[in-house]
Image (cartoon, rainbow, N blue to C red):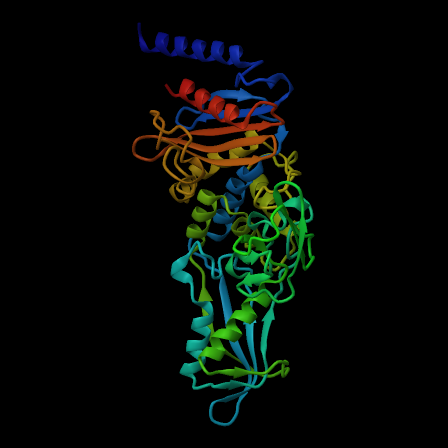
Amino acid sequence: MNIKTTLAAAALLISCTLNTWAENILGIDGEESTSVGIYIKDLTTGDVLVDHNSQLALTPASVMKAVTTASALSINGPDRCFTTRVSLRGSKGAAGVWNGDLIVAGAADPTLESENFKSKLGFCDSIVANLKRKGIKKITGTVVVRQTLKDAGPILQWEIEDVAWPYGAGLYGFNYRDNTVTVYPNTGRIVPEAPGLKIDVKKVANGSDLVRGVGSDRLIVYTRDTKNTRWAVSTTVPDPSAVFKAQLSGVMKRAGITMGTKAVGAGEETLLYAHRSMPFSDIMRSLMVRSDNLFAEGILRSIAPEASRKEAINREKELWATRGINTRYTIINDGSGLTRANRLSAHFIGDVLEWMSRSEYARTYAGFFPRAGKEGTMRGFLAKTPLAGLVALKTGSVSTVQCYAGYKFTDDGTPSHVIVILVNGFFCPRKDVREAAENLLLDIFK
């Protein structure tokens, strides 16, 4: 059999396989009532191996992060950082006295004091060290945190039940410690101190839950055990800057530096310290592997830092439109995919992935995706199979939604195929959808 005959036979086999899959491509229970969009393309030959409802606009969940990072990497490059500047406003007085205020200009850096970048911890200590270096022992004014981010806080399209949990932390002009604290509901203790956050414990018959409305300073804790004083939960805060101010005040006090309680007002500003985040490429890698919503929202807003969220999203869509990708039937409300109201098609996501695979940042971008069977949200996916380590996908899951998007690689790490699988409204157990996706990929790439 010659090469042409072999290729023809292979093409016929693929065609027959696709026809067999047409009605029940995943083989999950209730699939006839489930929305499924799949797009798998060979980047080397340009052949589309699977195109199943690829134009259907579906909820992508955290797969949205793959689009957010592609957009931000294209616009900002990999080396940009968030810079939070700390300045002294006013004038130097008598020995060791600063007549004025300490100004902290927030840069909407979502990583400031984040536990996910331990090498960058010590923001308060750095401020105090620089004050001591200048010989300042007293500030007559107070700490003023400037925040210029528009549409700050949790996104209105997010579900109310998400806002109080760490994965639902909103982005502010100034963010601190992942915008979360640890609460001991039955004692009222909060670590670190979060001024203004009120705790209301309500006893219920079963389970436990946290509820805090968007912009609310009242956290309601539902629990069946109102006596366990050691029980603790992590929760979001309505004002991260208040947590920072309280912590900085404590660090300054221990260092022997006193401070007033009211702002002095206008005056010249002198830069004291500039805190730079990790490079964007490190932040994007972290958010993709761990599926961090706060980081994703920060990266989205970096696309248009002085503008509104809507303007940042419009710039994102314009970017892909100018690259010849149809954005007409996409709905984007956030950068993380936490809102169920987002709508993307498998084909759109596939086009973005393909464009990035040919861009100057191809290897950097492909490196953001967690490897199957190896790391992050993909640690258990395709583990102990021939595809372990050769497939890297961003996962996305909310209620009745399970999605995957990313690449298959050659042995030398070059993206060889685009893979997008979007499943919405399934009725079977989630593990059945995962297994079906695994089996589909093992069947295609056997």
